[in-house]
Amino acid sequence: MKKTIFFLLLAVLPVRILAQIPEFPLHASKNGRYLVDKNNNPFFYQAETPWMIFINLNEIEMGELMDIRVRQGFNVLQTMALHLETNVNEDNET
Image 1 (cartoon, helix red, strand yellow):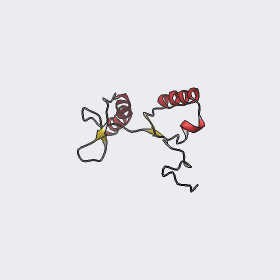
Image 2 (image 1 turned 180 degrees about the vertical axis):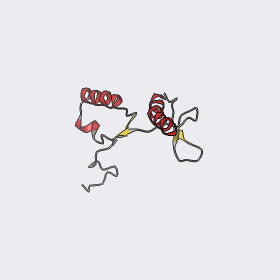
Image 3 (image 1 turned 135 degrees about the vertical axis):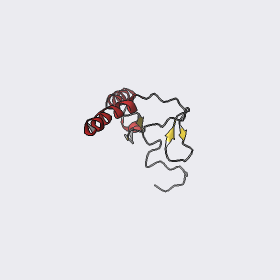
Image 4 (image 1 turned 90 degrees about the vertical axis):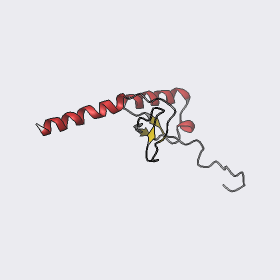
């Protein structure tokens, strides 16, 4: 019986987590260890990391990638805002 309940929880909890609709904006929890939404509900951060998406893909390809990742259960795309060779200090070193 305990094994059955355990396996039911394993089956239901991921669905419950993925079914959450966060209330933005997100912010750090009081203890600073995880993200919460504006109602202080924990935010499950399931990220894909297409670092160079803004450089390597056009707008249509980005949309297609995002649609695929949403279907796969991702809720965050973590990317680079600047290219690796971008010199933010504007000196002449490359």
